[in-house]
Image 1 (tube, rainbow, N blue to C red):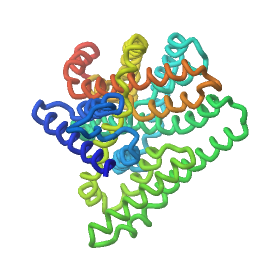
Image 2 (cartoon, rainbow, N blue to C red):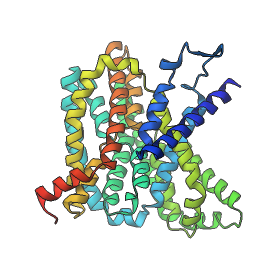
Image 3 (cartoon, helix red, strand yellow):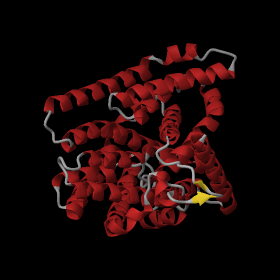
Image 4 (tube, one colour):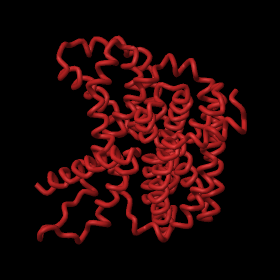
Length: 403
């Protein structure tokens, strides 16, 4: 009963956040995150209402799984917008934009991480934390702002694909380094399995469409939804179990569905499901945030924000230009890539597993606290930059012209 009460509080809270967002005409994503933070255990522990302890929401299995489903559905919809033929046609531009993104932001992250923590392994972890943008938050923002059908969406989505594929391998290597790197063979095997699974997903997206077309041939909306959800969540679950990002898996499943004649039905039927679990995901980011950790890392976070916001804007702008976009839309790409989120938190969790092994306990805790605060700031800042992009767009046009 207590768990159900906690879930009820969760949905009531995000519903109120939605009402407030509509009233003040702001993006709802930062409000979901802030509401989650307010209701996190670090804030509500010890609070009683009418003599009853406040229901525990953080750490709830429903919230954790619901957040995973939010990522899965958001990236599934991203795949529906980005079929394999389009991916193959854009591979050179994706490669150019992705390598610019990687070189500028991962490189800056290495320097920043070493400057902040004075440890080579910490530098590698911080590089991943500040490099990877949030596929889930950016996808939701693209949909909410109506940018998903615009020219700037393609370089953003292409860069996200590149990042997600890179991070699938990076996480395996980082986990091996953090646990001491004693079993090089096991690490190499994990990387090989991850790469083989990604190749399998590519083949699924390329050759699985006829099967998906037949699987969705039904007049029942109920059966259509269950079949699509069953395939997507199962493949994402298998991916996560073997160490591959569930987001990457869901994206490729979406690409396999994209050429079918059922895309319009899937979008209409699953949109409410996507948005419901997306709200849980953003709430989860807030729940995972302990505001009591902020004072000890405020200076580190401020330095990271000052350094990594311009680098993301720069790499995104150059990525937009690699797609032959003009300054205005290229600036939108740069602003849109600022948000960090789920993968940064996963890397921080990896850092904690190295406490007392490859990292001192204090250093591992500091990296985790830094990441939680950094993600909160960048998720809010990124969504706000997208919503209020016009001054930056005008600057780009005035500075670089309209071509």
